[in-house]
Length: 160
Image (cartoon, helix red, strand yellow):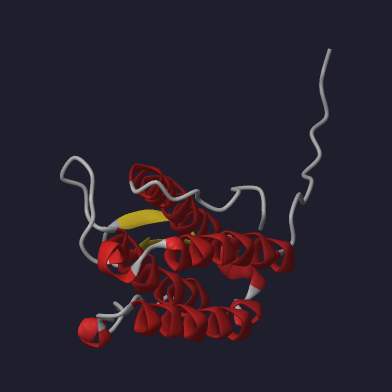
């Protein structure tokens, strides 16, 4: 018996961006839930404070979209590192708008082309974007642990 396989497109680029922005919106709620002094200083078990994790997400999002789009992998300018929750949220919102603008400009073929992102991660453009989303989800879980340790109810994970 032979089985025919058919390639099926499961998600569009527009749906992928919406999915990512849903996660980013939830991460923003986690940032908002932290008291200012705990956002930059609190950690559990030697892990980084949540502000450092959010800074990591910021350093990945737009540079990954730019890299997938163009094949040029330029690291984020880390000179603007926020020192207050207000600055962190402003930069987060700036990037959210930038993602909405730049993501639709990714040429369709670039989602399947293989690159070595930032000289480190080899994979298709889609896989690199998925990595950024997965990384944010993983570290957002740390934020949930931190908030609970501080006696703060984190936002519901399904409210994206």
